[in-house]
Amino acid sequence: MPFALSDARKIHYQVEGEGPPLLLHHGFTSSLEAWRFFGFTAALRERYRVIMFDALGHGQSDKPHETEAYSQLQRCRDALAVLDALGIERAHFFGYSLGGWVGYGLVRHAPERLTSLILGAAHPYEDRSWDGFHGIDGRDPEAFIATFETLLDERISPQVKMLIRANDLVALAAAAQQPRPSQEDLLARMDMPCLLFCGDADARHAAVKRTAALLPRGRFTTLPGVTHFGGLMQSDLVLPPVMDFLAHQSG
Image (cartoon, rainbow, N blue to C red; front, side, top):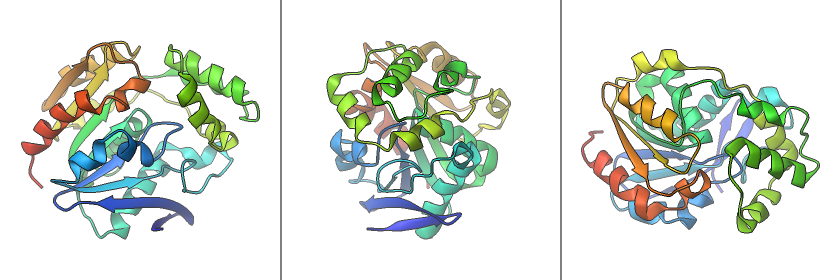
């Protein structure tokens, strides 16, 4: 099982396919297996070297219980550690939700490592909804899930609740307490090709659409009737614009 070392912590990753490198970053409470389970890996590996990793606190990666371990900078360092372990200088980056937040961080901290950006259900504006996790320590799974539902402004299905409960919720509660201040200053720096997408049943839809319109090389795709959680489950809707976008990039 391959691991990259990032500041002495283990980050689990897997690689499939051949071609230009494409780094995938899953959402909060998920893991790299989501890309495979929902059909992304099978399609993308036909044309790209697909690099998936478990974000710190998730999957088979290390799970510290301290909030300071989960800064945006640290998450960027973790992503870059995976690329470094593979000897990859630049890659396409595809991040969903939490992964999109990390994508914005890479614009700030390592834009030279990005060939292009695909950001799902993530915007650069201040997000105070995460403040709801203050006081949630993860020891009560139901309180954790209820707080997450409030944050997303949607109900979580029983199947997804079961997957969330399988996590180290103390680690994830610590991670959730990282602040999400405005990063609007990054818009002027996002001169690489960018594809943003979001479900129109996701409370973040308007902000993501507005972001794309402000980018010099930005595109936006709406997913009709899709919620926040649904945005990574509906690969039949997401893959066509993603594949079209990537086909027009180089590197």
